Amino acid sequence: MVQALRLGGRLLLEDADPGLQPLLCPDESGPEQRLANRLRSGFRDLMAARGADLAYGRTLPRLLREADLEDVQADAYFPITSPACAALEAATVRQIRSRLVAAELATHEEIDRHLANVSTGRLDLATAPMVSAWGRRPSGLSLE
Image (cartoon, rainbow, N blue to C red; front, side, top):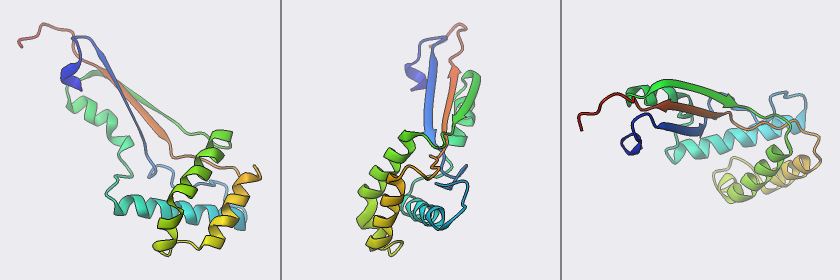
């Protein structure tokens, strides 16, 4: 991607970093939150087993500097209690339900209970921080 940039062009990369904030419910105050966090832990285990780098997002600034970009900066977005968090959680759990059960990380009953808890809107759900990193290709003379 860096090679495709014009001189002075900018590149923005984004990736989630579940390792920075592994909990679905940062305020683990009851059984609903403990179940949610256990299922999130199971999801992370499934991702890691498939080779996902759960800490990749935090490496983006370094990778941009190593690619010789200048003015590298980064930030992270970490929503808590957004309607989007609940929608994403419900969709994710429905999508990986069979894998969670097959790996004996949860039962169908626990997943049903969790989905019901999510649908109440009473859980303070969080997503993994989304790391955004950007940099600029030097605008000096190119010898290419």
